[in-house]
Length: 446
Image 1 (cartoon, rainbow, N blue to C red):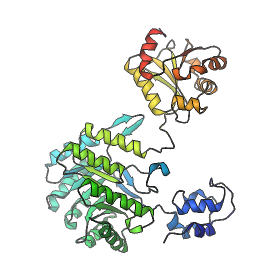
Image 2: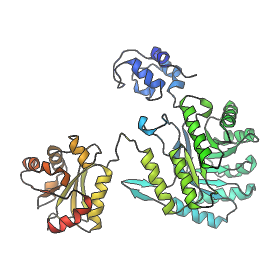
Image 3: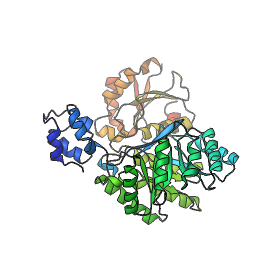
Image 4: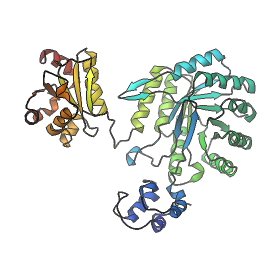
């Protein structure tokens, strides 16, 4: 049973030291009861109190980690229903399904293609997280061969899917030292599947068509000692799936422990890549911890991975690049110096336009706490003093002999102040939009 804020308060040091970020220990206790802070934020809590508060301090959704030879993927540890309340912590794992009825050569080719996929998105690398291997054949030897084929082609984490524990055991034997997910425990086989997961120290996927069925199974399985569980609401239509996933998240956040586990969604057997994409997108938004697809194509995967980044980026911390001076198209000392903020989208908009036009330039990125140009200027985070400080910090003057520096057009008002800060520089005001930079550089800066 979760403790109330008052009960938690009685176990805290009650010094009101404010080092946790709250004015009183009572305020911190209330936030801890609501799962909105971590117990470790209190620097003076005793070990005895930590033990007593362990359940209340634990996230309402258990963290499950799948490990392969070349990486891991995590789900769980979520504490809110909506990202603006705090943030979402672990991006859902996106995995591609392989059937063991396919030829090993075909499996190997597909796995190598999918696992090698990587694309840069505003400074972040987008790629898939692993593979699911399904025992469609029902034959242990065939399944073991398929798992071995996948493991030979990639080291990414695996999910083994099937309902027969003896068939799945052959695949698990190929994954010694790893932490896969075994998916397929239901009302008819949960005991054998639990024993299998415990024997191989694997997470266990629990399959059910209702909240009651899932809750009953998880309690039985945990009594046998397996705690790392993933819930699979086994329904196919989008409406019911959305309702079940939302209800599971709501109940978990209310500390209903039988459903306090991440979920998995299968956007498979859809018969249509467009519908598969819709199923996967819904699962990413509401509230899958793992999403399994049949189809791997760049045009299907890329928008899903971008969607995932948009949802699971901390809304209170904009995507940023490192403040520095960046070289575009191997600039010479005579080439101009452009200025922008460290908001990733702003940086890549400027860099891509200039690079795409084949124009050399030096790009000075100023620390504006991840804000865009106008936002940072309005907030006082992008001003002449900061720009000048960045120019001096990175020794820009030593890299160029033509001291021309270009401000973003929206901040023309800073030109006079920047001239005072950098008296040896020719301060110019560029266009307002990045798309107009190449034309401006060709006509004004040549």
